[in-house]
Image (cartoon, rainbow, N blue to C red; front, side, top):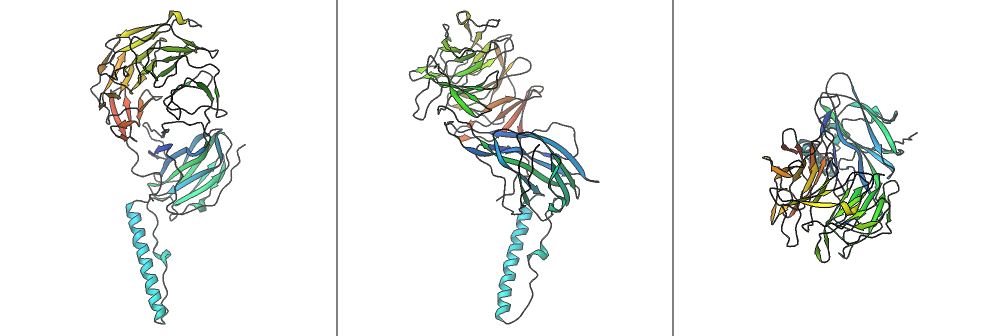
Length: 473
C-alpha cells in the first residue's frame, strides 16, 4: 500500500515546480464537471543532441499541470489516476496553484509594496518627531487573489494530503512532499468557492535517467517485442561513426552491448522492427559517404548484411512498416547531397522465418511530389502514410503529402503545416490524429505543436492556455 506524507506548505509567490530543459509541458484548461469534447494533455520531451552514457536524474511531471474549475453550486469532486514509474525517486511533490496571478495581481502587489515602503518611511519620520502614529501594516489592505478557491481538499489513494484549512484565498502556491510507491494512484479533488474559481495541480518527481553502454548521437532507437529498446550506430563524442549496438532495458534503466557489431558502421540510418521480430537497418552514412547497404539483426542477436542493396544510396530518409509487412523507404539525401523524391519498398516474405536471400528492394520513382529529407512519415489507420515537413535544398518545408501503397504514389495536401519544420517528431494518437512537435525552422529551434486531422485533412495549431502552469517570476 502506498504511504503518503504531507510536507509543510509554502505561500512564496515566486516558487514553481522545478522543470528542466528535458521537459516541456503545455496545460489545457479543464472544468471539474465533465464536458464533451476532446482534451489533450501534452508532456513533451526534447532530448539533447547526444545521449551520453551517464546516469543522472531530472525532475519530470508525473501528473498535470491540470486546472480544475469550480463551476457553480455545491462543491465539485473530480477523480484522476496517474502512474508513478519505477524510475521515479522519492519524495515526489504535489504543487497546488490557487487562483491566477495575472498582470493585474502583480500590479496590485507592486502598488501594495510601494505603499508599505512609504508607510515605513513615514513611520521613521514619525519616530524622529517623537510621534507615535500606528501603522495599519500590509495585511489590512491585502486583497484576495482573483479566482482562488476558498475551500476544498485533495486525497491521494484515499488519504488526505491537502486539508480544507490549507486552502486560502491569499495563498498562492502550496507544495506537499509525497511518498508514493511505483504503480497506479488515484487523485481526488474537492473544490468549493465562487463560480469560475480554480486551482492548478501538478505532481513532479525526480526521474533517474538510464545509462547507455556507449555514448552516441545520430543513432536509432527501436522498441522491440519484449519491451526493450534496440539502439544502433550513431556517432561517439569524437564524431566517429559507430558499429556498436546495444539493448536498453526500461525496467533496470541499464543497457547491454551486443556481442555482434554492425556489418557497416552507420549513422542517419533507419531501424525497423519486422513482423518476423527481426530488425532491418537501412542505408545512412559511414565515414566514406552515403550508403546503399542494409543489414538484418536476427532474433538471436546476429547481424547479417543483406545481399540486396537499395537502388539509391540515402541518408536522412524514413522507413515505415506497412500493414502487409513491407517496409516503405522515402526521401533522404543521396551521395551528392540532393534531396530524393524517389522511394523504395523492401518486401518481406510471409512466414515465421526470414530468408535474406529472398529480400528485394523495388524502386518507386514517383513516391513523393516534393523531394525531402529529415522529414517524418506516419502510418495512418487507413494504411496510407502521411509525409510532412523536412528540407529540400536550402528550404525548410511546410508541405505535406499522403503516400498510397496501393498506387505507389503520393498526393499533395492542400493544407500546410502552420510552421515549416525539419527534424521534428510525428506521433499517431489513439483517435487517429497525428501530433507534430518541435523541430527546427531555419536557424531556430521550435517549441510549437500542431495536430493533423485526417478526417478533414487539416492542421490545427495547439496553443498553451493563457494561464501559465506556474506563477511568473
